[in-house]
Length: 403
Figure: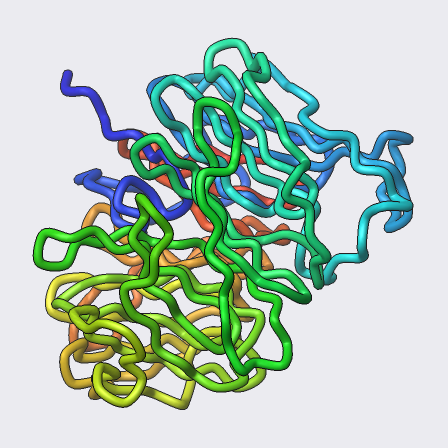
């Protein structure tokens, strides 16, 4: 049997929500088509990551066992056996003292960034609380650092990416926002990019995306008021586009049809398509189109074939012609939603905040395939393992497979 693909980072092997799985379940419930459910202590909204026969995710466990805002928390990385969901190892990476932990948003957790599995290591990022590298087999900590702490707003959020020998993440703090690249072998700083924008509120929670344009790699990294394209090896800027006062930017960018697609954050998000072949300030020259209605605050977009899809946080899904920005259809598809869109087995998957999983057929008509209710809060983006789904809820992780 051919080896199935890994799901090594937030939004999968491409970072854009695509799985190569041919057949993925479209029907499930808390008891139907459940291969297993693993109970997870604490609370964390990081997405599951798959490397070989193991699954990795993070959580924040109250030290005294009481889930109240003002408590010390153990920030942990967990490794599960993919076959049965049983714990292989469960490692504390940092102890988060309540007195030193700024308050978080009610929809956030203290363990929201998704880990990266790369080259036998697991890279765990807890935003302002610290970053670490663990051995994927044993959970032993190779290195950890809290050197790059910053003053957050609403907690942590954006996930890191690995590029060659670098671990890169956004540090869009309340002040002095930056993008940092650490040596993935040592955790030492290799470069820092100081983000400049006119946005009054500097904090954001975005995950960068690496793309290639005319043979040159670009690190696309949105922040408050601006999206920057950087040389991932050096941190030098290639181009940037401004979008005013947009802040608390969450959706990961998407690259398709020669365009970068992104959303500009709070208070009124705008969906943008940007041509990434410019240099310097491209605000006036390279924004191909923008959509001011029903753009997402939180869910990342999805490109499938010759169409682009996005879902607003209120559950209204839009289908868009990516080159023109023409809206093909808009339909209410879920309840309130934060998780990003995912494509697998020929279908688009949406997971809303109440635990409702909705399956939609891509195309120029809104075609509902199924609705599946896990009846439990769910803010994490699903993942794919072999031909099964991994769906995280507040109490645990489901492996959904055809049974």
